[in-house]
Image 1 (cartoon, rainbow, N blue to C red):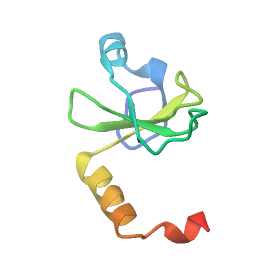
Image 2 (cartoon, one colour; image 1 turned 135 degrees about the vertical axis):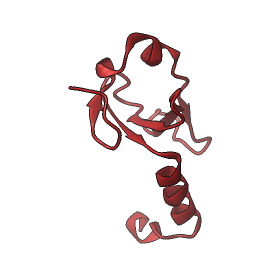
Image 3 (spheres, rainbow, N blue to C red; image 1 turned 30 degrees about the vertical axis):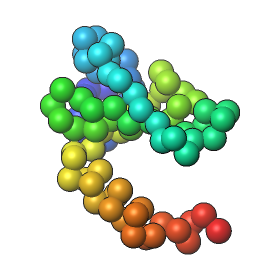
Length: 84
């Protein structure tokens, strides 16, 4: 599987130096068991997203604009109905 923006990919498909250099970050609000979403900035400026339970599993890559739109929507409460 190739490294394509906006599509699911296996972390192993990322070039070795890129994969090894990623610094994953999760929210301070993540639960203690570690079940959370983690993000890492790629050298291209895009944002990689993964499930912390599967650190070697699939990841998604989004542009900064896509992540900004999502975070803005979350701050505005656009997804609150999914949490009740």
